[in-house]
Length: 399
Image 1: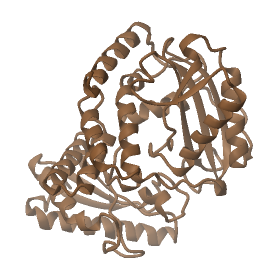
Image 2 (image 1 turned 30 degrees about the horizontal axis):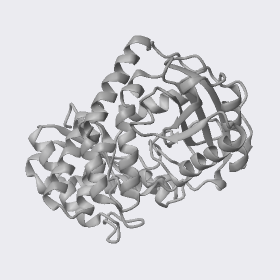
Image 3 (image 1 turned 180 degrees about the horizontal axis):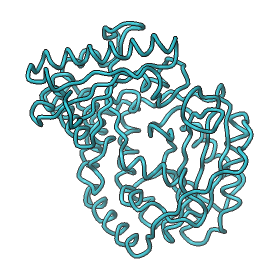
């Protein structure tokens, strides 16, 4: 059986079983007392032991636990830190919980409805919120049971900020566009908005087989196997949940790495279309420090002209008005960041209008400085690149 046929059959079977058992999930109760901030290894070990020791004893397929790669709880990115957590959990389970068999997420590993692990690793402030100056990481680890459709174990911990390397893995670091994607939000909700006994989010289950293919595709991209990555991203696109951000970013990246220029342009056009349909398009234009000029040494800076041309063309074709909002990291004074973010938005505005003069009265520029940081650590490196983004959002009113 070919890979795509197997995936199609598995999606159909998994979705059918879910329809028979799924119910609406409950909201998670507020935490009474925040956990202490611990060193990285101790926090991860404590949470993993709590999950595996509190879960119901495994029987049959429940003895297999599939790890759906852990992610940042705001951006959905995988990082060096989340990879390290997965490695530590795998080693801990092998040593301390031999009744379980831990596997990576693949279409075949999901075929018998095993238990699964999801987890989020999110920078938070002293009030336990992902806003303002961050002081620690919030780690949430959840075990779900596909057979019952329920969350069966959960643990949370806080991790010292300085202990974690939150640099994104290659495919996420290279991805040019960020959007709040419903598939990632379903993953995050399984962790952050759940409690033991609540139902697994149906959107998450519907996207599991696609996630398995995307995991393989991401691994292939990270390891430089771009032709294989492209095949896998194309396969993922044909699945039930294939209309999602990771697919479109991956198709663009793989085509670019393979120097398939016309196909890469078409893939970026699809990315822009996806963002406009989702009413959000955050693009990682890299600027020189303190400047409104693009950084010449950025990995994809030579593609910025094409990106702008495709954004302008799609906006004009769809006759939309665009709100262009600049963002900065928290480094520097608030007044300077507000001014710089506005200037960068105006620079993008001018470039778009220069490409499509018809947009001259259909764009609005604004700057919000660092008030809407997604990461907020202020490291000004690859780990908080999304804090220095430019967002383009369709709006109803053009002035």
